[in-house]
Image (cartoon, rainbow, N blue to C red; front, side, top):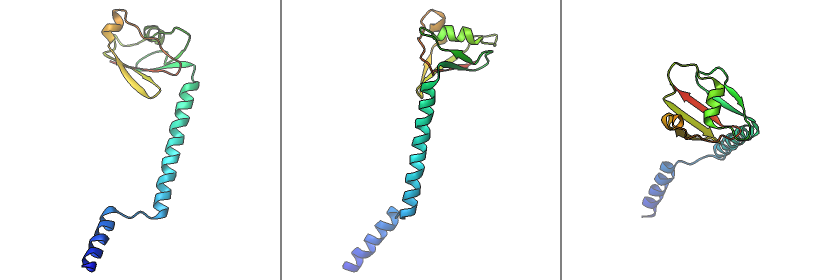
Length: 122
């Protein structure tokens, strides 16, 4: 009976996957480095005093001023396509949210914050 339990226990350990100390340490260091990189990117975004506009625009970097809105930023960026954008996405601190272009044209505007990124999709 003890022999049988020993075999079962050995099978459980093998199936669970033993991790060597060096592999565990390597994973830990990789996770730490990824966290550091993510924190640095957030810090850099927070330090930006502009709004970035991605898409077919003439001016992709708009200086942020107090009271700047999404509509104002799109006008300042100078959208170059013949038709209005079909999709607008605002990225704020790595969080993405869509804005309905039709509601923007009807006058519903969104205040922007420094470091925001606007994605305009045709």
